[in-house]
Amino acid sequence: MNKRTLIILISITSAVLVIFIFCSILFTRKSKETQSIITDDSSEEISLEAEKDFLEEGNSQNLQKEPETEIRVTYHVQQPMSSLSRLSRLSGMGVNVNEIDPINFKNPDLDILREMGADQYLISYFTGEKFYDNADYDRALTEYTAALNRNPQFTEAFISRGKTWMKKREYSRAIEDYTRAIRLENNRAELYNYRGFARFERGEINTAIEDFSRAISINRNYIDAFINRSNAYYHLGDFLKVIDDCDQIIRLEPSNAIIWNRRGSAWYRREDDDKAIRDFTEAIRIRTDYAVAWYNRGNAWYNKGDFEKALTDLNRCLTINPSYTAAYICRGNILQHLGRQESASADYAAAQRLERGR
Figure 1: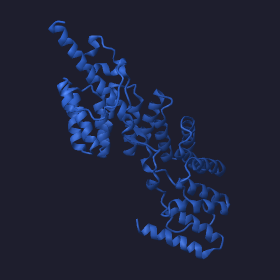
Figure 2: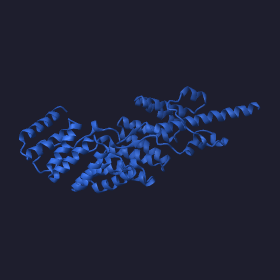
Figure 3: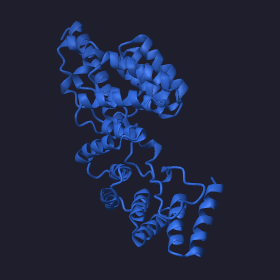
C-alpha cells in the first residue's frame, strides 16, 4: 500500500467518524429536549380564575384548564440520514451514509473532533449544545451564531438557536430563526410546529394554527402538532375543532389522559355534560391521580344536579391535591345547597386562605 492510498483511507475513516457522531447525537437528543404534555404536571395545573364572590347555587363552575406548559415541542427531530451527506465530502468518496449505525454519543469530545478534522461550524454547533444543556443560553447563542456564520445553510443550528431564543422568551427572534430553517427545508413538519409554538407564545394564535395545520398537512400523524393546534383552538373558543383534533390525538395516542380531559372540557363548553363526564372518566381511568379530571367530573355532576357524585369526586380531588382552591369553592357551594352551612363555611375559608397565600 503506497503513501497516497494510506492518506486517502485515513481521510475516509476520519470523515465517517465525524458523520457517525453527528448522526448519533441527532438520534439521542430526540428525547432529551421535550416540552411535553404527558409529564406529571399536577403541580403546574392552572385553573381558570375562581369567582371572588361565591357562585349562587345552581350556577356552573369553571372547568380547569390544562397547564400552560402543555404545548408539545420535541426538538432535534432526527433528519433523514441522506440529508446529512452534505456535512462532509463523503458523498464524493462513494461512502453510503445510510450504512452508518449511530450509537450513544451524547457528549462528543470536541478535542477529538478537532483532531479528526471536523469542520469548525460543527465544533461551534456542538459547543453550543453543551452550553445549552448547562442552561448557559448566552454562550450557546454565541456558538450557534458562529456555526451559522461559517455555514449559513446549517438548518440544525437555526433550530437550536431558535429554541434558545425561546428559553430567553425572545419569541420574535425564535420565529425568525425557525422561518430561516423553513426556507432551507420547507418539507420538515417539525419546523412549522416549532414556529407555531413560538407564535402561540407571542399571542399570535391564528398564525400559530396556520403553522400547526401546515405541519399536519406534511405529516398526517404528527401528534405534537395536533396537540398544539387543539390547545390553540381551545384558547379561541372553537370547541368543535378542539373535539375534532382530540379525536385524532386519541386515535394516535389513546392513553393520553390530558387529551381526554381536554375533549371533556370542550364537550362541557358545548353544554353536553354526559359526553364530558364520559371523557373525564376515561382520563381518570388512565391516570387515577389526575386532580384536574376529578375536579372537572365533579363539576359536571354538579351541573347536572347530582350533588352526591359531585361531592365524591371533589373529595377525591382534594385528597390528591389539598391546595386545590377551586375544588373547595365548588364543594362549599354544594354543601351550602344541601344546607350544611358549617361545612360550606369551612370550605370557603380554606379557599380564602389559599388565595391569600398565593
